[in-house]
Image (tube, rainbow, N blue to C red; front, side, top):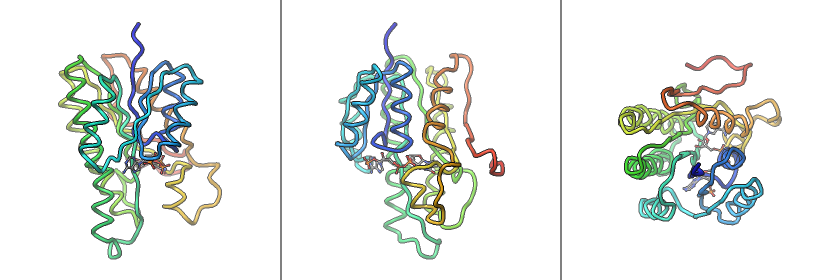
Length: 235
Ligand code: NAP
């Protein structure tokens, strides 16, 4: 049986790194991308130790030409994990337009361009799967997270249309909306927190990805809302 190939954005650390390792363990070959080549290289080595072939390509997802080049170099893929993203956290009256635009450039436009390139490739190759990493802030409002939250709401809107456009081509599209995950990002967005041990861990998101990838062709799950059991429901 042909080994499937997964492209993971934001694979240099955090959630993307955990997803890359999980996919490598579950039989995928991986294409890893981000801007930090040394960190991507380390993740690539860890994937190879788990038996996967790993290719590493640096790309800035705020640049359309770099995204097109990335997908050209990656070739046909079976799975896209649209994970790269970042936030700048301010009250609405303090948000600079440049910060708003920078966030949307990567979290929405970059994700859209990756999705567009993956759909083109998967329609030609006969199907595939795309998983967009949104957030609890994609469904719920939090103070100081307007720019980031709006970008994650937009990613869910994009997901809903992609689900419909992919359906007749054998392309399953899903979103995962995690609550706070213990990574660099949460340390920036929640400077009040010091103990991250009770939070969702990157591996928990990776396990949700593996679950979606294990679904049979006739069944799908549109969105996984992943929260700490101690937190209130979000949908
Ligand atoms: P992280 O540790 O800060 O990792 C972010 C990743 O995105 C890095 O690999 C980074 O790679 C990549 N990235 C950022 N800007 C990029 C750009 N312009 N071009 C290419 N790659 C870029 O954050 P994380 O927590 O793992 O977040 C991963 C995803 O999960 C994000 O979409 C985030 O919104 C989402 N999420 C996070 C949480 C949370 O609480 N942590 C909760 C829900 C959803 P380079 O630095 O190498 O470019």
